[in-house]
Length: 477
Image (cartoon, rainbow, N blue to C red; front, side, top):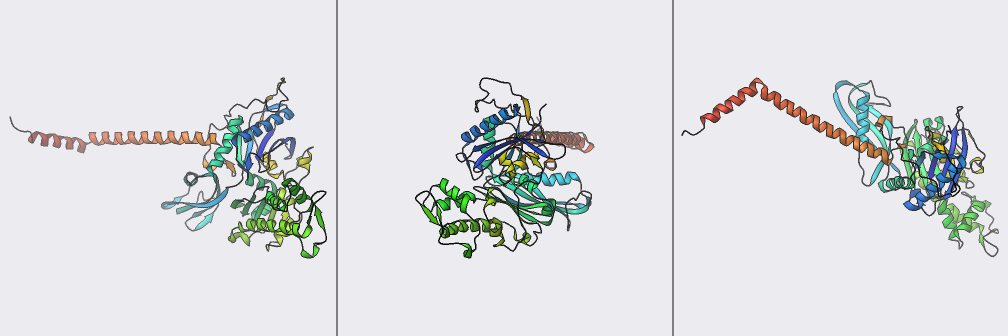
C-alpha cells in the first residue's frame, strides 16, 4: 500500500500542495508539488472568496492525484495570515492547604483556559508558559504541594470568520482534513534549532502580504503576531514610479536592495523599465528602503521588551522576502542584535527532483514544515483510469473523514494543532451530553436526598406533627 503525506498551505500569493514520504532515517522525499495562483481568492493569508478557493483546492488535489496515481484520503492544512495574534491569560485555582497537585487539576486549568471567549475571535491554540504553585514557577507542577496554583497561558487567536471560511472551503471542495496546524509554529519547528529556541530568538517570516513574528525563550513560545505588510507592498511602492505592477515586481527582483550605503549609490545610473522608460537608481533605492524600513521596524516592535535583551539565538529571518539583497544588514542597522541568520531551508534533510524545492530560497519552508508534522498516511485507493482522468477539475471529492470522531482532551493536543470544525462540533456535542448527564445525576441525587429525608426518623416525626396540627385546626361539624 502506498504511503505519503499531503500538506496544503494557503499563502497570500499562491496555494501550494505537496506530497512526500517520511523515511525511516528521518529524511523526507518530495513526491509531488502543485502551485495555484491565489491572488483572486486569498488576501493577506486568509480566504477572501470561498468558491474560488474551493475550486483551487479541488484543482490542487486533482493534480496531486494524477502525479501520485492514488486517491488522497485527507490532507494536512496550515492556518496563518492576518488577524492571528497572541494574548496572555492566567487561570487561578485555590486549593486546601498542603494539597498535592494532580494531572486532573492541570487538565481543569487547561479546560478553563480553552473555554475563554473573545469577541469575534477563535482560540486556535493555547501555548503553556509556566505554572505557579504558591510562589514557585515550574513547567511541571504535578506532584508538588501547595494551596494556590496559577496556569499562565499564551492564547493564540484568529478571527472567527476567517477560521469558518477556511473550514468551509475544504468542506465545499470535499477534502477531508487530517489535522490543522498553525503555520508559524510548523515553520518554527522546521527552521529553528533547539539551541535557538532555548537561548531565545525571534523568527521573522517575510511573506508576500504579511510578516509573521514568533518569539521563543527557554523552548517556549512567548509571542506571536502577524503584520499586514510584506513584499507586495514594496512592489506597489515601486509601481508608484509610473509602471505596471508586473514590471515593478521584475525590477524589485533585479535591482532592489533592502539596505544601501549612500556612498554606494551612483546617481548617474538609471534602471530600465522598458525600451522607452527608466527610473533613477537613487529614487528607486529610496522607495524600496523606505518600505523595508517600515516592515523591519514593525517586526522588531513585536518583540516584547522583556525579551529583547534575552535573544541569545538572535534573529532568524525566512520566507520569500528574505531573498531581498542586504536584508540582514537592514535588520542589523536598526537593532543592536548582531546575530542574524537567514534560514533558506528547513533543518530536515529533504530530497527532491523539483527545482522549486531545490532552490532553497525560503519560499517552501512552511510547506515542508507542515509536511514534516504529518504522521497519518494520506494515501487512498489506487486511481482507476477513466476517460476524464486528465481533466484537472474532474477529481472525485474525498469522503468525509472519520478521524475526528473521538475528540482529545486539552493535555492531549499537540502544540500548534488547531481543532477543525468537525472536531469542535464533536466536542460541543460531547459537552452538551456531559452537562445533560450531570444535570440528570444532580436531579437524581436531589430526589434521593429528598426521599432519604422523607423516610428518616425526623422526617416521619415532622409529617406526624403536621398531620396532627392539621387535624386540630379542622372545623367541627
